Image (cartoon, rainbow, N blue to C red):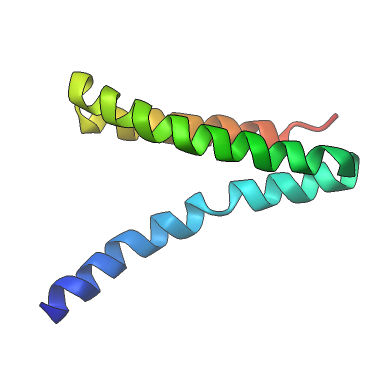
Length: 87
């Protein structure tokens, strides 16, 4: 039981850490450009968190979980590219 717990933590912690980085980085960038848009960013993040959970489940049933992972990786890649664009 303990081995499975440590294995689960070891497998989940690294991707969870890196998936948690884009939103705080985006908030930092947004707050330096336009502080009044930060509440909107929180609202949009909350909305898409709810919607994406349901859509991921539907997409997994229709296409398979592997495609959900590819789509998620693509979305995070787009976010990282967008974060690197200089205005």
